[in-house]
Length: 381
Image (cartoon, rainbow, N blue to C red; front, side):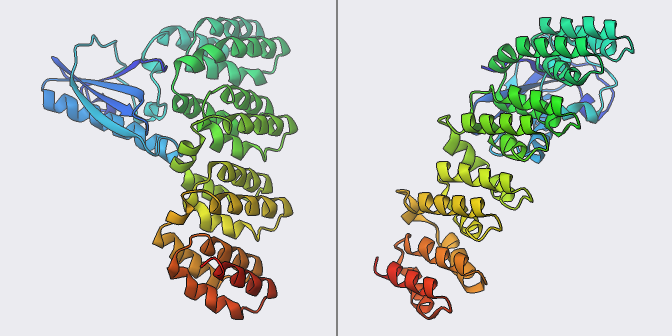
């Protein structure tokens, strides 16, 4: 389960205003799509109404930032009401930039110790950095884990080795205590680092999460410029696809998966289709059909596999009229015979009488294979 630290904002400090004398505390919780707690928000104010208003505002502010990163798309904020919690001291200079981090390490346990270690790690002395990076292993928080990963690319060999040991010590314990989305939000920025060592460590750490929530990160990293990072990402993706929550995560992230099908990297497109093949998200059928005419052979083959997986799924005959109409439009507008042929297959598999007219009109298509497919699909009726 996640580390239930409490993010406490005094008065309206979230908005950059001055603290006020307060005597009531109100709590709001951020929940993911499965209603699992991700983060607490407790605000202190003079009146219950004002405290609850600011608690909800803080929750929604952080939720929007997560959603901009493609996370917590099904997340919600829920008002809990008055609580009796003794808040830790809060920095009067808290800015909106500090709220980019959607976890509570900065305001909770080990805050001051990690601040000191952060300062020590910026030292020009390798001995100081070495001691500090070893000390990180004693503070099982996401912040400490991220700091250790960052110094796996240190200029000094001994510091890099010590950082690697600290990461190995921290990652299992921290991941077990934290919500998957919390870990992803904190570590995903490291996958964009210019250092392959940081990217590799971030990918390997994220692959320890026992959830399919990492599929988007892993798909993006399979096209990395470094071989070791690509291998780690492929292994992490295969592991993520083995978890029971894959279908649920894929449905929640279907827009992001569809967007990845437009990536300039054929490896990214290929692996996005692999996820759709296994998850069988029928609402992505239009994008899958388009993939059958991809410029890359392997992607085209995988798109056909995804098409077969979707159309053979038990719930495919319940495809919405909106998607059926989009398939009809795709047939009428596509210049690719492969797209037109596979569009007819997707339409015929619905067994919906409304597609018969499109199939009949396709009997006069300019391509022989398309005409044959139209005849075969009509026989299903």
